[in-house]
Amino acid sequence: MDTNGVTISFDDIFGGNPEDISLSKLEGFLEKVVTDTFQQNRTNPNELVRVVDNGVVTWMTADEAEAYLQPSENENENLKQSIHNALRGDRRILEQEIKVLFILAHNTLHQYRDKKLIPVSEIQRIEPNLIRLGRQVNFQLGSLKTIDDRMKLVRTNEPILDAFENKMGELLNLQKMGKREEAARIAQDLAGMKHKYVRLSRGLESDTHESSSIRVDLQRDKKSILSTHRYLVAQREGVLQEETHDLRTNIETMKSLLKSAEGEKKINYELSLSDKSMQLDVREKELVVVKKEQSVLKKKEDETTSIIEHLEELFSQRRPKEESPSPKATVESTPDQESETADEQKFRYRMAAVERRQR
Image 1: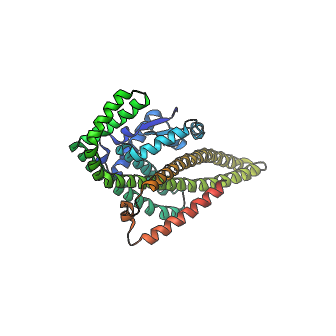
Image 2: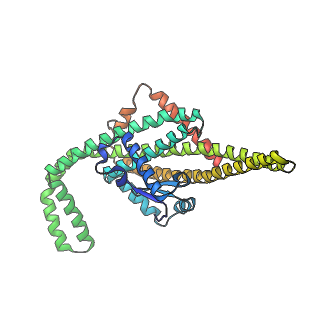
Image 3: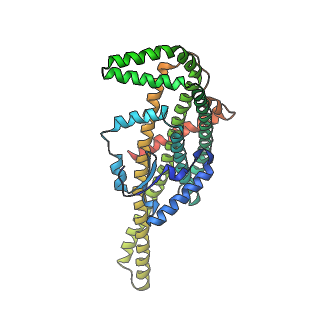
């Protein structure tokens, strides 16, 4: 991602061990990193579009964001890699990404709330859902770590698991290269290891399935975070559109009054006109950024939807007839589950209304 904007890597944000940092501490640390970085660059972050991609957060100009949004020749390959990362990638990278996305959404909500940039009713509606989503993400990540650590311990104690899988990969490569004799020797080694490998790998099947299920749930949580963030930004767009409309009307009125004004009254109109024009310029610049940020969030949301659909299709081919509920089902089975579901449904309706307005 080539850009002249400011870039901060996940490693800069998380430091040594992200698992030891709570979301609240991480949020404070990210704010400090951002503030220090932009002070050094003498740049206003509110005039730039935030993009989270490939382990970094980048603040881009509107033109750079527009270039980022253009279709890429490598989109299919990138999607395949994203699907692999979601299912089999490093858990820590998955954890970093979803936490960063959550914190950025949370920061946007706090900024809009504290500066009264969107209606209070929207803050009151969204904040409880976002907090609940953050708790759910933490629960899912904790469950995934427990399972992955357990599976890692089994593999450490039973090296035949990794050895068999490595040899299997070697066999496939030799067969592709047409090296039959070498492949035959590897196949003979595998035959001797197969019985023990199958027995041990069956013991990991439950954990493997549960780990995969949690990873899909985390992608759903990621999509919810992106959707919530996009909705927040859409509310800010609506406010800015009203404000710019009102400012333009005021400016036109003052221009008309100036034609007949004299003396001190004319000076006051001129000062007021200059002030309103500067306000309009600031809001128009923010409106451009807000629209681009919505588009970036929509792009990431659509990518996540594609990942979820591919993973669900994959699991539908593997899923046994009867299976235990996933951890997400457990955490959501609370007394206020019905109200949560109703809130989510209302949110979807509001988001659909936003999208219709933008067409």
